[in-house]
Length: 108
Image 1 (cartoon, rainbow, N blue to C red):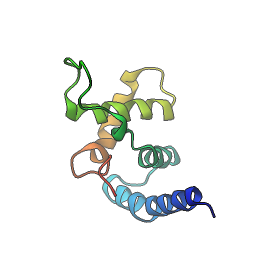
Image 2: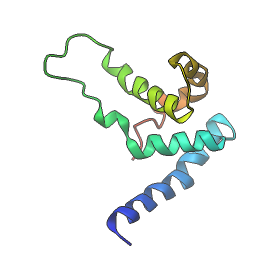
Image 3: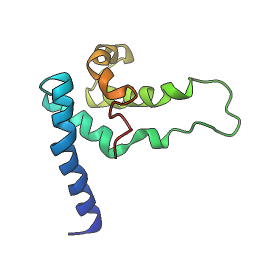
């Protein structure tokens, strides 16, 4: 088994054994699409690609909002939503995942 496949296997095992059960305790039963979204969030760690300081950065969204916005765009793509407004319906369900102390970008 290659290093990459071993690492991916460990991440997937962690998602299945700890993250899914925790989220189901908090949110109730997860649909397959929700499980897919959670797995993508855990694998891509989009927050690590968001710069808090950039050369010449002026204004923009507050730093604490950028990870949530990025996860919103990922959710929009996973759910194949045509407008960003549609993602607002997901907001209530996923608030636990995005809040401080939730798992969104804070696990491991």
